Image (cartoon, rainbow, N blue to C red; front, side, top):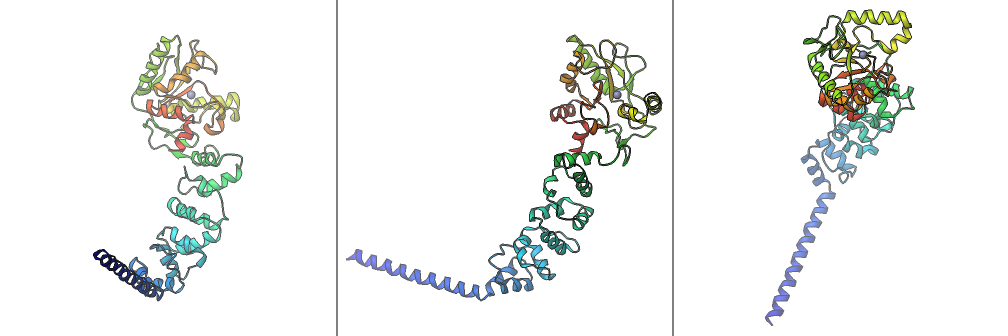
Length: 371
Ligand SMILES: [Zn+2]
């Protein structure tokens, strides 16, 4: 008896609860469909009254899952295109004149939301202008890894000329400067004392630059009248000592060279071998790494420059990085370094960088272009 009453009571309670729920839901649906609630909601999350009204009138509120500056401005600037609603929501707003116009242009031309977000995050004004004036390019998102702001036109031009290369390689090559002829687009080296000082056919040292801390190479470590920067010389001595313990003899053949010395040397090579040939192995004055005091041409035990395949060569290839030296002009990388293969020319960069470069398998140019 008592149990029956309890059961009836709870059924009654459930019934009342159900009625209340139906009431609430019905009321909600009514208010929602009347638009008032959705406008209230849209304004609450940041849309202007006009946009809230616009979205509600077109029954889009279910698609608008949050506030988007891009959408707000598309509507308020009369640049809203209904097919792009989802895109507007995905594209981060960037404060610039004509942003919504540009976005519509990119969307009209087939770019994805992801591409467009990348353009504005990574590109300079010049890059964006270039994109606005060129056709759809499917490569954009694939070249972002080592992208340098302002280089977009150069990348696309180079990719057009060298379709046979990997895209990422083309980006690296442009970063190196290879889309310009050697000795053009030259930058002055601003950090000549830096351990990573970067000198090549696009990076020039001042004619008056002489490194500090040059020391004379002792005759037990090299030929006469050689100088090196003390840090690279100390490293070279440690390397030569350890090599010797393994029966391998190496010596400094050519270390630091002054601007004037390099100038004479280069001119002599040009007279001897002709301009074209000399350019493949000799640097013009100001463009030689030897002027930094960090480069060394290494001699073997017979006092001739080291050649591929010799025991000195093999020892250096496996060990030089441990002392901070890298092979600067490797085999088959002439088109990157601008110099023919030089098995004897090493460059001091310090142990940490030398290991990084060694592990990467890159030339110094490639490694620098990825930094
Ligand atoms: Zn050299």
